[in-house]
Image (cartoon, rainbow, N blue to C red; front, side):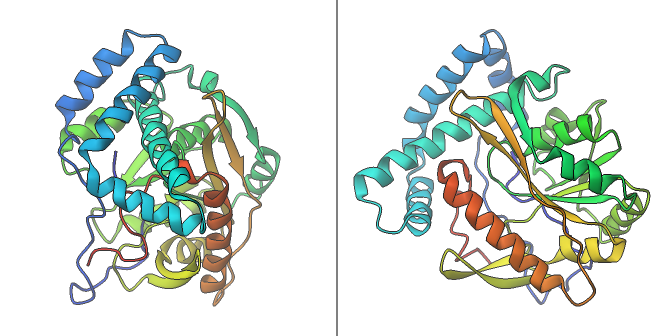
Length: 309
């Protein structure tokens, strides 16, 4: 699964910073995905998720650096949490990631994807905003099953949906995850002109979904306090929304206790000229609230507060 999914509305010169590779591992290969899908598809979902969680419990110990980073992240999110609790939470992060991954490779491209969703909160406001005809900038994060959320919005939004994703290092993985027919158009940020296509789509009244919890290392990033310390976030989504006059709508797809998903849609808000930084601040506050509520579903295997150059 890609670890970065954002867009900026202008290209940044190389002198600012190279595009960061936030996180990568040797298992992100099409052959691994195919074998995992074949093995998982023969099991009913409850059994499949139990196996996924069991594998995560064992396999996570092969990633000591990632475990350490997740633990530090959790300690920042939940200051004062005792060591024993943090250890339990770290294991839960890896299990929840495995569950979302199992659904990604076996279920979330099928026609019956709706059976995985327990409910959608805030869909009325989303529908009302969509009726204005200005398009929607849906902003999400690496929290829960974000790719499933995009597919659900495309199904229920009754309009073309463009989901901005990071380009996979292995093109075969890209084809496996996002190839073929479907209601979602996946867009990678291969060229600076990508934003022009997204702007045009918004002006046609369509939906553009992006992730807003990781900066890109460009001029479009700004620093904002997040869990008590400065971290950098992308301004691109808010500049795009302002240019298109489209409302920004936060949305998250979260695992419930019964292992079904609940999509939570926040209130739409417009971004006025000169108000982009304030809009980003509102988004970061929303993100912090959601991550604090669901710390074991925030899949960041690196230190957001000290990102790579």
